[in-house]
Each structure stands twice: as C-alpha cells, then as structure tokens.
Length: 309
Length: 258
Image (cartoon, rainbow over all chains, first blue to last red; front, top):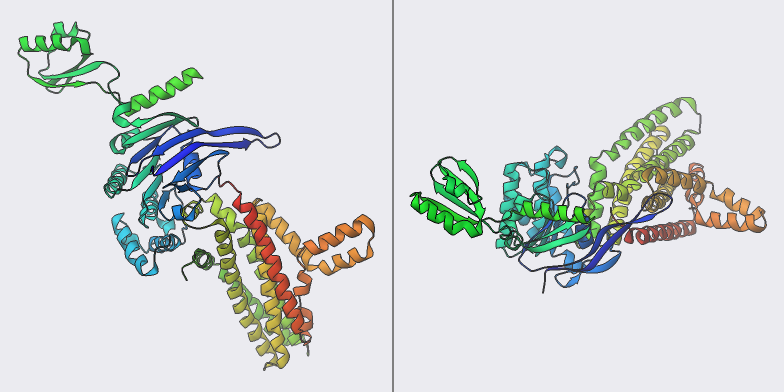
C-alpha cells in the first residue's frame, strides 16, 4: 500500500472581485509515493507544490479528486496522528519558548503526558536548540525557526513527514543539517515527501521525484532514470594537459583541468579515441557516460512546456 | 486533561497574559482608586452608588473592548500568520480549534473580571468603611457582565470567521451598542405594524439582549436580583454563545486556509 496517494486531485480558485473567474492552481494530479521513500516534489515558484501539500494536510479542500495517506482519507484524525508537517516559511507562536512550543505540539499530537518532557528534550538536542530552549521564539533567527519547524514536524514520531521547502532560507551548514536529518528519517523507515526548488538537494536525497510546472505534473520517476544518459555522449579524462589534434578531430569538446585533460565526445567515437590515447601513451583516468543533471532535466521540462504553450 | 480543546484554551490564555492583555488591570486599578478618593470628597451619601455604577460599567467596557479586539483576531491572526497550519495538520478538528480559542479567551475575561471585581469591592470598602449585605448583589452583576463578555466573544469570533478584522470590529461593536438598547428595539417592534413590525421583531430577537444582562443600576440601589433572572440569563447566554459558535464552526469547517 502506498504511503501517499492522490487520485486526480485538483484545485481551482475563483479569482477577481466582481466577476469571479476560475484559476486552476493544480491540474488533476495522480501520484503514489511508496512507504519508506524520500520523494521530492519539484517545481519553480507558483508551480502548485504548496497547494498540493495544503490539500494533503486538509488545509484547503479539493475542487475534484481525492487523496489518501496510509490508506485513509486525509482528514481522518487517525492519519493526522501519524504525519508531520513543516510549512513553507514557518511562523510559530512567538510568545512561547522553543520548549513550550514543542510541549504544546506534543500535547496536540496526543503524546502521553509522561513521555512529553523526554521527547521534547530529545528533539531540542537533535536539532541543536538545547541551549536556546528557554528563549522566546520572537528572538530566534530564521535558521533557528526552521529548526524548530523541523523539530515540531518529527516530534511525535510520525510515519510520514511532509516538508515544504525545508532548506529555504538556511545557510549551507543549516542545509547540510536538514539533509542529514532527512537521511536519518529515511534510515528510520519513514516516508518523506518534500517540496523544493533547490535541485541539488533533491538529487542527493530523493529516491524518486516529481516535476510540476504551472499546476501540472510534468514527470515522475527515479532521479537516475530521469537523468540517464540521453545525449549518447561520453566523458574521457586522462593525465596530461595536451589534447592531441586527432582527438579534437573526433568532435570532442576539450577542457584542461589542473593536471588532467577532459573531453566529451560522441559515444560512437570512443573506441577511436581510446586507440589514439594508447598510441600516444596517455594514462587514462576515467571513462563515463555523460548524464543529464537533474537541473538540466528540470530546465528542459520547463522549456518544453513553454514551447508548447 | 489531555484534550485538544484544553491545550488550545491554555495556550490562548497564555498568549493573552504574555501579550500583556491583563495590564488593563493597572489602568482599572488607577481608575478605581482615583474614583474612590474623589467620590469620598465630592458626594454625600451616594458614594456607594457612584462607586458601584462607575466600577461595574468600567468592568463591562474594559471587558467588551478586550473581548472584541482579541476575539476578532483569534482566528484571523492564526490564518494570517499561518500558525494554524501546524495545529490543523495534527489530530485537531476545526471545531475543537474554535472551541479551544473561545474557552481560552473566556478564561482570560473571567480572570480579568475577577480581579476587577476585587478592585470594585476594594473601592466600596474604602468609601463605605464596611461591606453590607446588598453589596453581595454586585457579585451577580459581575456574573452577568461575564455572561455579556462571553456573548461578545462568540459574536467577535463569528464575524472574524468570514470578515476582515476591521469590519469584524465594526460589526461586533455595532451589535454591542444595539444589544445594549435591545429593550428599546423590542418596544419599537411592539409599536410598529406590518413589515416594519416583522423586521424589527426579527432584529430584536437576533441581536443579543444585553440590556437584560445589565443590572448595574438596580444593584447600585441595593435591589436584589431574582434567582429566576439569573437562571434565564444563564440559559440565554449559553444558547446565544452556542448558536454563534455553531455558526462560526459551520463557516470555518468549509474555509480554505490560503
């Protein structure tokens, strides 16, 4: 049974003051996320990522279609006890301290009173806020608030965790910590569904990703599958800073990097290039197929859509 | 008690305390102390009457201002600041959120009225040197003021569930003024005919009958309040609050939290 499933989930808003006209924020979305997966929901700003997350959290209601989490309807209280949610740019009750806020959320999540203190303290230590536990949140920096946000999302040990732009506004160290935390959650067997427009994060963390643009699902699949060798090109690296003219003649793009030469050439010319290097007695370092990065794939998807429009 | 309503109510109370809402007690204390000293010097034999009138009116007005200004922000502020997202993504029903918010503000107003009540009795003791049996009726008047504040909180919540904070404040204060003169509205309904009669009668029943909850004048004159009035007013306030809260829940349950 998938951890998260949407069935033609759709959201249309009525916009305008006098004459309301429909604006579709999310085209019918059918998606399944397996249990234990780290699933990236990618798209530029305004693509429909937050709308989808709000629909899954029951904060807004679908115009059509439905969604299930752990096999139950999204508004079922039994589901809510087993999910954690970090909204985009989280804002919390700033008159509370981090400890009070987490204790409040633990209570609302149904964590038994005798266990609350232990969980809160453990979570404060886990996100590195033990020293600031008694400081009111109005004195917290953006990065610290993001940590509180992550802490409240996983405090009650949920099975499925939804993170809306979890790296947003974080410095490189903070981003690294969030990445580590997502990896820990995966190691604990939890399902993580996170939206982002930072593609390097998705590339390094996700088992599968979905790409959305203007409310429409453009692609879904494993990162490796989406970024597989589509160019039919290979990258050849050898020691030395000279590129023989005979290799250049094979249609290679050449670049010297430090003590090494790097060329990209059509797959059909690999054997010829290797023969040439052997003859020239160059020491081969690596030979790899050229893969599209997730970023290139993403841009390609965006451009295709714009060209179609 | 591990129930979402209890936790939300406790958090709402804590917010009011930390946002220094109860600081109004300082202003009230200054007003009562000033009034007690001044009344003692300028009035002869009517000190008690003046202190009760002034004190209870101040309790009511201070409370209504707090009930309306905090009540209109109870839901809208949570939506605007998106603090609601992390609450409703937990096993908390929307009606529980509304009920918790209402109970939290009701608790704040009751605590506020309690301390103000102490202030009124303190001023009474200062001007009369001793408390009389008739002074116990002030407790009933204070109880009715708390009922009035609960109704105003429920009204403010209802308006804030579908309107902007500014309009909600205007609507709620308008209803407070109309409700305070509801006896006149009923009198007008009795005198009018035809469509005007039906419209004014409907309006008279729709607006809160706050005039019935205002016993400040009889209490100031030492008149006792009947048990049946206490019972009917309690029932009326309970029904009015529940109806307004049901309306709030009905609207809020269908609302998209953008």
